[in-house]
Length: 389
Image (cartoon, rainbow, N blue to C red; front, side):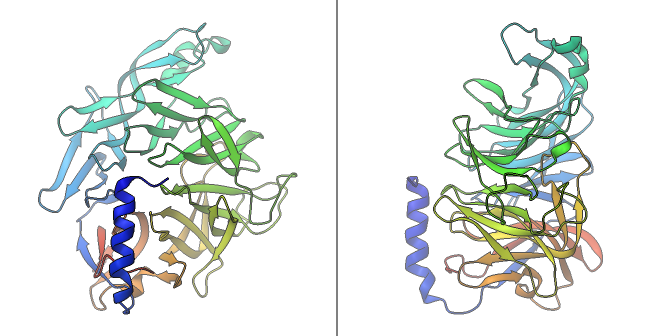
């Protein structure tokens, strides 16, 4: 069931949207030499600048979020509608035990997720692990845990890149701390909505072979499948990148059967998954062979990239966007299909948009590109935010 705020926004969109017949156009706000990663409903943007996490607002500009005590870097990954920011930073921290018979480990330095608020600043969340397993002990201090998102409850999700050929996604709750998704050799949590549904990937083989997109709810896992349908032999791959409050999921899925997937020989397509219809191929922009969807907003607007170059993460790194399509950022809607965002901004602006990182409920989009040849972050704002695609 939709919360009160989304229901109000949906009514506004349906009332005002049909009055606008023109094609969607955007104004472009230059965010400077920043790399945006997320935007909330209030237009607050977070991202990275020279190894520092930042938050940007229209009135206040860029604000450095700083480091953890004794730390050397920070990177922002998500922001909720209360202005809470999550990301990854280094600094002193604790590896909590995964089972009661294990011991916690105190680390002088630990790469860990953080939560930042305007009042309390940055707080490290520590990590979790099998610290006593095979006498690994202090080895867990070198195990990085990377945050990927946060919801309105302040719950944080993410993954660790690799621990002895294993990888686990995690969920940190304000009420109970951190837990792991251990549904296979490899799991990763890439998205969370305000209903605390968690989206990610899992694989029952080493080195992410045959990874599939999955949905966790109350630790119960739902397999989202592939564009080829049921895949008992794990010859096709898929990965989930974004989820909205209606439980709609977007990501990528392979279009060719391969003995070892994902791999550089595969050709992924962006997908949209719903519980009623399953996985749907969103295609590509004209002239392109590959695509990947990164985020979806409440009204089903999807952003991502379309192109002919595909980059794969190295083996044993299932988290984040396992594949990245290099090309042109797109926006997709049920009514208009997939469109190049570069065609929807003012001509002669000097901008070339390279990627789209996030979209909020009003259809504002943040990402990276170049302006007059210089790398800058951007914020796109719809000319009419109530237009229904």
